[in-house]
Image (cartoon, rainbow, N blue to C red; front, side):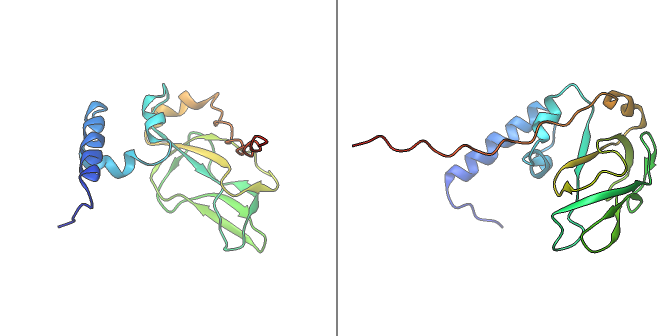
Length: 155
């Protein structure tokens, strides 16, 4: 059995489990619920969805070009299906889905150049009926870099 380092860990887990219950989630969903953006998606008016970012398809890849989308908006996607062809710094590689679902919105047009790794490129949903809700979807603006702290006051 796992041992908790302090009572603070146990209290934190209890609070997280209680919060999950308020959203109709089982405690086993704890790992998913603490992922970035999950709670925001649960509270948004949009159906459940995943925003897929430009993947790093090679160890040295920092940006890529979208050569072609092989799936269009509204098309079904099975795990392992090719979604797009991405040109890396070394080769053209297939971008494959890891889950079943439907392409709800292509966020970057075919032929996009120098798309940084981590940039949202496609929205996936589980149900075909949810695709229309993303017609006008725009991803959140990337977080601005933190401003440097102000200089200390003079003595």
